[in-house]
Structures are given as structure tokens and as C-alpha cells.
Amino acid sequence: MWILNFLTSSLGKKLIMSLTGLFLIIFLLVHLIGNLQLLFGDNGEAFNVYAKFMTTNPLIKTTSYGLYFFILLHIVQGIVIWLTNKSAKQSRYAVAPKNTSWASSNMATLGIIITVFLAIHLWQFWFKMKIGAIPPVNIGGEEYTNLYAVVHEAYQNIFFVIFYVVSMVVIGLHLSHGFQSAFQSLGLNHKKYTPLIKGMGIAYSILIPLGFAIIPVWMYMMH
Amino acid sequence: MKLTLKVWRQKSKDHKGSFENHQVEADDHMSFLEMMDVLNERLISNKAEPVAFSHDCREGICGTCNMVINGKPHGPSKGTTVCQLHMREFKDGDVIVIEPWRAAAFPVIKDLVVDRSSFDRIIQAGGYISVNTGQAQDANAIPIEKDTAAQAMDAATCIGCGACVAACPNASAMLFTSAKVNHLALLPQGQVESSRRVRAMVKQMDEEGFGACSNTGACEVECPKEISITNIAAMNRMYMGAVIGAQDQV
Ligand code: HEM
Ligand code: SF4
Ligand code: FES
Image 1 (tube, rainbow over the protein chains, first blue to last red):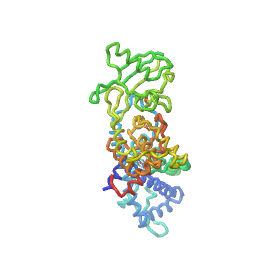
Image 2 (image 1 turned 120 degrees about the horizontal axis):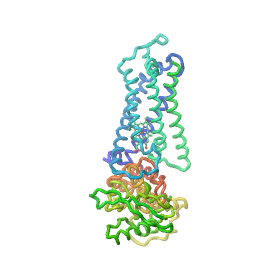
Image 3 (image 1 turned 180 degrees about the horizontal axis):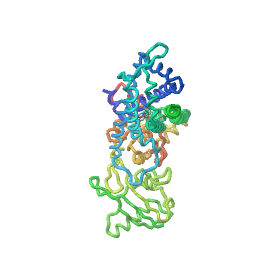
Image 4 (image 1 turned 45 degrees about the horizontal axis):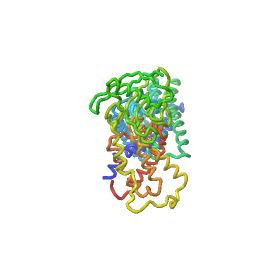
């Protein structure tokens, strides 16, 4: 079938990488905006209300299934591309060439570190909530899952704080190449707009991970 | 100047290769290939096996003089082939490491010579225009915008050397293939077959075992003709459009 031939061609695989990558880029932005409510200093009321909304609203629930699927697709496809590319190169030069940015030729290594981070991150918060292992809290006469308490507790541990900050640096590196690369894969390269896309990519890959990293650091310092 | 060469020696595709050290006396005015000639003449007079390397035009247009010099395909000068590289780029006492192109789709035939027939098969798949009858018409009969003609010309300067593949950490042939696809598709004569062409050439490129493009940009840094990766983006667009829109199968 033409569509399968297309999606399994080298260009089709990259199309999937770039579309899923762009989806994840949008997700990270939304995720960050929501999480900044952790810094409100209201004992997590706003955050807990928001968390309930995100896990019960049908539209968001549907989107979240898309998210799980796209993350898995991005990871599996990324590893497939990495392995085929390695076998296409076969051997390395005795003198290592210096003609790429470090991030661009280590996307899979960065991605695998992100996968490990994701597994721990999801285990810590998402999975505990899914299996109902988090005690409830009363906000304005209504019951909410006290996700805030779990996050708060985790970020009292300096090792988790360091782990989160380091992971954000890794995501930043992945996106320092990935953001603009996704547009190039889609064929969106233009004299007028490409410099803008590259600028946005640099801004995004610094600001978004920085925003995420501030949360554990802040919560650790504020107790 | 006195130089130490570490040259890759490999008997054939099936043998394991290794580096061999040689001392060479060269002067500033020699080209890199002339320096290699000096080495080979000495090896021959000593009844040793000369270093096999490929070359033809020695004026930067045929794309056969392929070696990776100190980790750089075509050596340290920007926008030049090995035959156009001068020894004045090096200085007395330098150690120069010389390796063949490394890519699964470019197997080593001997020493520094690789088999690039995978490129020929990509061209055979669609890198041409069909002119089935008659004489070529007057070039000025079809108006082509200056910018478009310049873009087509830039893409057409690709000499098919394979440095892009050699430079790419994924051994991807996207720069070469996209240059060939674009130089034809940008002109009215080539536009006619562009949908079929891009699909056939990408398919062949994948079948030859080249890697996928990670947009690292290594290719355009090392390309002796300075072909731009905007060609790759243009081919990505064209390929998607062709696959989705086409009524036939390639
Ligand atoms: C934080 C979540 C992530 C985001 C936002 C993200 C985003 C992106 C983007 C935008 C690209 C560029 C796509 C292109 O070049 O067309 C990319 C490439 C890539 N990603 Fe991710 N990614 C994420 C997580 C991961 C994970 C968990 C892996 C696991 C293996 C991974 C592996 C890769 C690989 C291997 C590539 C390079 C593909 C190639 O060009 O050869 N990514 N990513
Ligand atoms: S694109 Fe450049 S490096 Fe690649 S084959 Fe053509 S001339 Fe050589
Ligand atoms: S020998 Fe022809 S390009 Fe160098």
C-alpha cells in the first residue's frame, strides 16, 4: 500500500518524527503553564483543582491518549532511525569530523536519557495518581486528589531536585536541534522564515526547560 | 616540507584495512594528489604496492578524487575537491591522516577507492529528462525567471562526489539526491516528470542503504560545491506532495 511505503520510507519516518516532535513541543508548553501553578504558594489549591480538571475533562482525556501514543511512536521511531543510521554508517573515521553540533548527532542518546526520565517521572506522579494511591484533600467542600502533596514531598529530596534539573538540560539540548529540525523535515525552509524558526527554537529550548527546572528548585528552597 | 602520512590500506572489500605510515617530501605548489603521486612513485620504485586512489579531471569537476583528510572529506579548504587542494594548506612536520569515504553504501574497493555505483543507480532511477524525439528547441524559447535559473544552476553544480555521504554521521545521501531532483524539477523541461522522478529516486536511495537525514548539516559544510540543505527541504516538500497526490505507483 502506498501509504505504508510512504511512512516506512526514510522521508516518511522523518515526517512522523517531526510531527510527533512538534506535538510534544506544544504539550510541553501547556504542561509548563499548568505546572507553574505549583508556585502560587496557596498550598497547592489551584494546582489540585487544575489536576482534577486535566484528568476528568473528556476532551483532555482523549487528547492524553493521543499524547501517550505519540510519545511511544516518537520513541520507537527514533530508535528505529538511530539503528538503521548506525548500520548505514558502519565504521567511523580515525579522526573525528567536527562538522555538526553535538546535539544534532546525539539526538538518540539524548532521547534515551529523556525516556529514562519519563519513566521515573510518570512512575512518581502520574502512575500513583492513576492507581489511586494518593490521599484526598478537601478544597471548598469538594474532594480533590492531593497531587500537590506528592510533588511537594518529592522536591524536598535534593537528589530529585538535581535529577529534574539535569533532565531539563537534556531536554533543552534535544530541542536545541529538534525544534528547527522538525521544520526542515517538513520541508519548511525559507529565506525569510527559517532565521525566525531558528531563533524561536533557541528561545524555546532555553526558556521551557528553565521554567520546568525552576519549579523543583523553588519548592526545595521554600519548603 | 616533510610530512608524515597515515594512509588507509585495504586489499579489497573483504579484507580488513589498517593505517600505514609514510614520510613524504612535498612543496607548497603541489596539489594534494601530486603529493600522493610522489609517494606512489617512490613506492613503485621500491617495488611496493602503490596507494590506490581515484582521480580523473584534476580540475574539480568530475568528483572522483575522494579522500577524508584529517577527518574532513576533501580536506581542510572550504569548497574545494582534493585535486584542487594545495599543499600550502599544510606545514612542515604535519601528520596527515588519509581515509576513504566511510558508508555502507560505498564499500571500499581498495585503499582509498570506494564503489559509488549506488549513486549511479539513484540517477538511473530518475535523474534525467526524457527527450523522445526531435531536436532541442532554442533555449530562449522558454522564459525562465533569473532566480529560478540560478537555483537550478546551483543545484546542478553537484559533481556526485559523495562527500556529503562521507561527512554525514548517518551516511545519508539526501544532499546529493535533492540536488539532482531540484536541478531538474526547477526547470520547465524537468518539471514534467518531477513527481515520478522524486519518488523513484528516493526509493532507490533507501534501497541502496543510505541513512535517514537528521538535519545535522554536516553535508553542506563539506560539499566541495557548497550545495545548500535548502535543497533537502525542497525535496522533502516535493516528495510528500508527490506521494500524496500521485495517481500512479512508483
Ligand atoms: C520531551 C519530549 C520530546 C520532544 C519535545 C521531542 C522533540 C523532537 C523533535 C522536534 C525532533 C526533531 C524531528 C525532526 O528532525 O524532524 C526530535 C528528534 C528526535 N527525537 Fe525527540 N523529542 C522528545 C523526546 C524524545 C524521546 C523520549 C526520544 C527517545 C528515543 C526521542 C528521540 C528522538 C530522536 C532519535 C530524534 C532524531 C531523529 C533523527 O533526526 O534522526 N525524543 N525530537
Ligand atoms: S552534493 Fe556536494 S558533496 Fe554531495 S555529491 Fe554533490 S557535490 Fe559531492
Ligand atoms: S579529480 Fe576530478 S574532481 Fe578531483
